[in-house]
Length: 280
Image 1 (cartoon, rainbow, N blue to C red):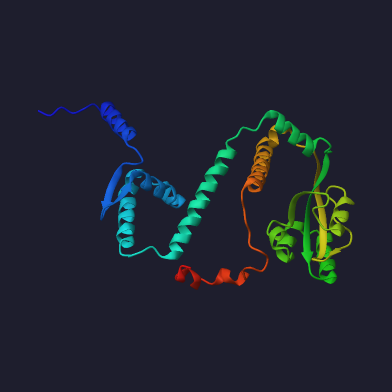
Image 2: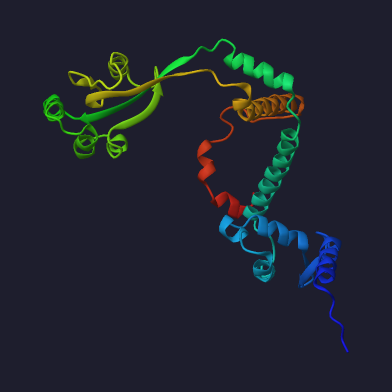
């Protein structure tokens, strides 16, 4: 009589078996060429996101079949085409460079570095005034005056904006532009907004290179400089990027690099795929 293992013991056995497997384990051979578990793992990691979300048991056989089929096709070639060799070399170089950058990115950013970067960016920063405004944009002054007459007659600003504004982004939102600070809008528009009290609309159309605007100031606020914790991740990324750029410049300076003389190559050859067919 066959005894059934308890579920917990069975799962433990499966987990133990999985942990004992290695990337170098051979899962298939094709005409003597080995396909390893590591190659399957890499293949899965490079699938589009929607496929990566599928459970492994739904992917295992399909990935293996794909690699087998690719190897069968590859074996039909007597030699590797030159363009493939160049592509492989580029891919190898790119992957190794990426690994080097990943190693640099793992270096810790110290609190002292973060504080110094924060002080440089925000120590002298002052609170800024921000505006929340809406506008209706039309092409001619006559159209703008007609819009103002409708508003003065009591029509809703947002509804008129949706109907006639030529600004497709804000028009669909009832003319709302959201929050913006000084300098983010063209000068005539910014000056008009700054001259208004909350809830007021410009008495005359405002002309810019985009057309004629009827502007309403919806609200204002004072924006304080961000706290260190609010920008910690951004600053850390900037610091790491700066370190990578400095390290890259250092490595390139120390490397034995030769470059062609100016004019030695015609840039147009970059489009000559025929050179790859020659393999020269």
